[in-house]
Length: 439
Image 1: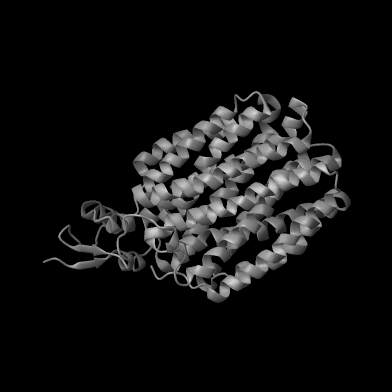
Image 2: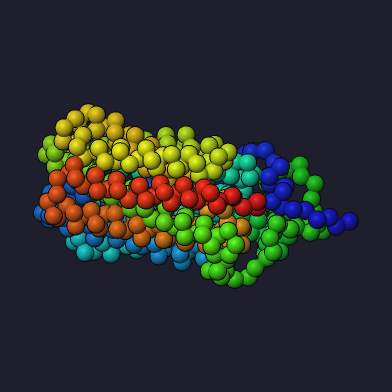
């Protein structure tokens, strides 16, 4: 006898098991390499200045190139995930940024490197929305933000690794090792994902693929009592094509623009710090060591901040994120002054700055997966990440302009803190209208 099985309710009632841990592991690895790749360019900055004899202000376009690619990739490859599946969207994205990151190791000019970083960025941008959708759609509602945030801790962990490569391998192998290592490993992982990464069971149910829906649910829980004769449904109707208006219907009319604004502001400040900290701090003592160490500590602080937020976001929504926005303002403003006056205290401030700025970004990254329904979840995440990348592109580019104006390092970080005030206000407004989607 045919029964009606609600896939979302089934997942919400299951405990976290081996399947979920395996999925989290592979998505963590993907995000780790993603974070490595984004930050590798920043760590190459001081070496490009010395090896190629360029002015540090010329690094701005190269540092922003991958972020502009991420903007495009988030929008285009997020749509691939909603139309053809999260698995294929993730694998295509990984292969694109792996190939072009590897190719960057053979670039011979700043122009070539900028083009290859842009192309790699397209792949990087596609990873975010597809990974968020896949993680959220296999997580019980009570743990949805936690699973997405744990996945994104791989991003900051990976972002700290180029610092180690820069200190241990670059002196003997050149800055090229930063790109060749990251690209080669990502290509290998993309091949592994073809055999290990599952397709979203909610996506399969919406598409009416009973055989694979049953297969995925049995992988989640081998003891589950279902068959292909059952009718598999979700809390939403199947849709064949995404329409942008879906992101502005009902409560989304105000929530979506506010979410985009908060993403753009925080990513602008994060990528300003992430792209320029090694180069700016290295000018204080004349060596690259302290700048590399400061950014590595900043990334590790972000990992701790994300872990601290994971359960809080599931329980309290965006309130703890708003608080972290407020704390980030004075911390970021102090970084430049401390770098020149109290270098040891600056390292502590770098950790606290990462805890707040990058930590709250973890919470924001989980929000699209909680807010939007399955039919437009990857697109919703893609647009949030994509519009956010407008800020991410502006961060290093505007930073390059300000650096070119010969402003003191203390003033640079004070200016960087100002947009965070706007972000805190927007995030507070978002908490008043946002209640995560039920599905």
